[in-house]
Image (cartoon, rainbow, N blue to C red; front, side):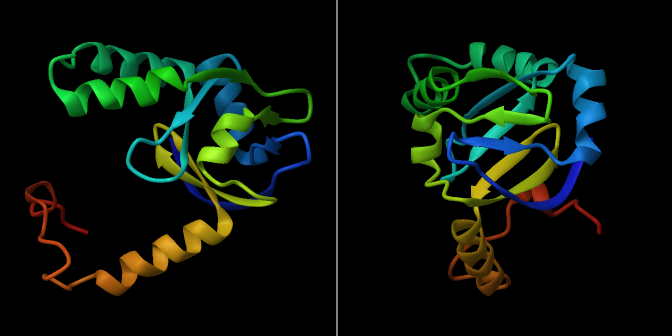
Length: 153
């Protein structure tokens, strides 16, 4: 289970170190095999352990190619999926195309999301987070999702 927030630097070659608290989990659960892809909803990346990615691929396969949004989601997620592994220093290489999509600069944040990580440019994340927080409770901006009505915190 991945949770938490980490600030990390991306080096000049596009490598980023996975926080040390997650490395053993990646090795145990995924035998060091990860998949990184575009987040089709935001300007960020998703990083999955391979077993979790395989579950996502099964769900993507079940989507219809005749539904435009389903087809676009499959194109984005599968088309940009890249296999990666932690190197001896616990880093992954983020392909240039993915770095460009997410506008990753030197400083990024990693957000644990249970079965995956989200990787954001630090400034983009801060702006998005602040925008979301400002809109909390503003019913003119968004209505409550039915799926959230049963969530008790």
